[in-house]
Image (cartoon, rainbow, N blue to C red; front, side):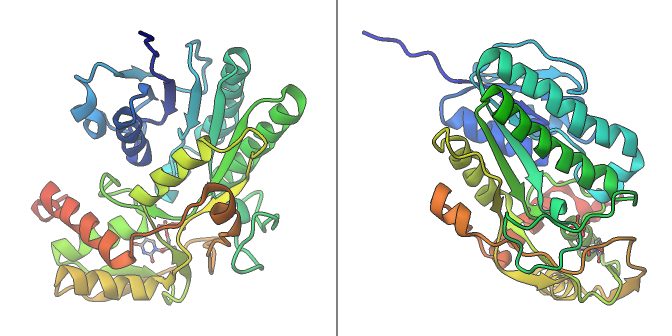
Amino acid sequence: MRFESPKRVLVTGGAGFLGSHLCERLIAEGCDVLCADNFYTGNRLNVAHLLGHPRFELLRHDITMPLYVEVDEIYNLACPASPIHYQRHPVQTTKTSVHGAINMLGLAKRTGARILQTSTSEVYGDPEVHPQPESYWGRVNPIGPRSCYDEGKRCAETLFFDYHRQYRLKIKVVRLFNVYGPRMHHDDGRVVSNFIVQALLGEDLTVYGDGDQSRSFSYVDDIIDALVLAMETPDEFTGPVNVGSEFEFTVRELAEKVIELTGSGSKIRHEPLPTDDPCQRRPELSLARRHLGWEATTTLDEGLRRTIEYFHALGAEAGR
Ligand code: UDP
């Protein structure tokens, strides 16, 4: 009889919105999961249901510091991802992306682990090419309020590719487009959570600018599928690969949809557009289709319904 030991997987940012869903999935697939989080935006409650599991371990750790553990795979998710969070401590945001990438790549180099970086559509900045293919280099302001996130994530990609070229590390770089779903912060300022919570509370929905700016919203379960598939691709495939929904909605359309799905009496209120807010964003997905065999399957209506249920159950009405 042969006993195979489970794959040991490190998820940084594992107690965050995306990370907690990924930890769940990896445990369900039989992996041994080490979840590392400094709890800046992550929350123990997101993984509370996993705590007693024999193949789950939670570690308070900030990836700007080195980490010495033995692992076979690393999913590097740690970084505050919503504009209000990443702009609150911009220097720490850049450090998390850059020093964090160096530390995690160093760990991958020592252990021989595969390592996946969750990058972002923000690397395209306010794009002049639409939809955005991976070959597009982007249009990013290097000195604006969003730069700590955008440039931090861009530099992390650079580091991933340099470690790959210089040390032959097995890397995967995945660019995510506006992910939403249960376990988003109710007050993290992102548009989907803001609108749902406002609608449930009967408050005005705050549409920034005229609401004609667009995004492609991706439901969390679809994104987790894509991350796991990306990690499993052959070593030659490094990405970067876009992952997201190809259905694009304006922010005004999103507001109207949320009002309709919640049955709320809320109205729309316009507020000023934040600096450097991208006008449009939609992924070009042929690489994801070809290399991951992946396609998002959750419609915006269905994903919003599940997210509304989550916030409803959380007691969003009970108040902030
Ligand atoms: N937005 C909005 N009202 C809000 C929050 C965001 O109109 O209460 C807009 C924001 O200006 C942007 C879009 O929604 O155009 C998506 O914002 P989010 O912060 O969710 O993501 P990102 O800007 O990083 O794509």
